[in-house]
Image (tube, rainbow, N blue to C red; front, side, top):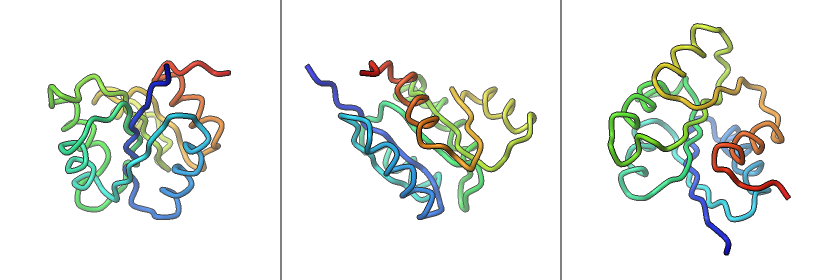
Length: 128
């Protein structure tokens, strides 16, 4: 049996979004939905079921930390794993993201294998 996983990538930079989508395309049975800011991300979350969320912190309209807070306060998504992918590398930013409910924190520039490994780990996908 092959499980399909829906991934939501919330990133305001089209180039960074494409990089993430390309990296995730290497994982079998992952379907990626893209959102260009936190508000767009919430809209997409309301419309469908996602197994994991990858989000940037610095975005217009609604940043990634507000998105994490909103997702964690929604009973339908409170247990959905969230990976923060950001240029913000300070310990304070990392701690704040984790306190709000993020499951992982990856600083840019990203390495595709690192992102893939973390997604597989959080989704409990067997590495073959």
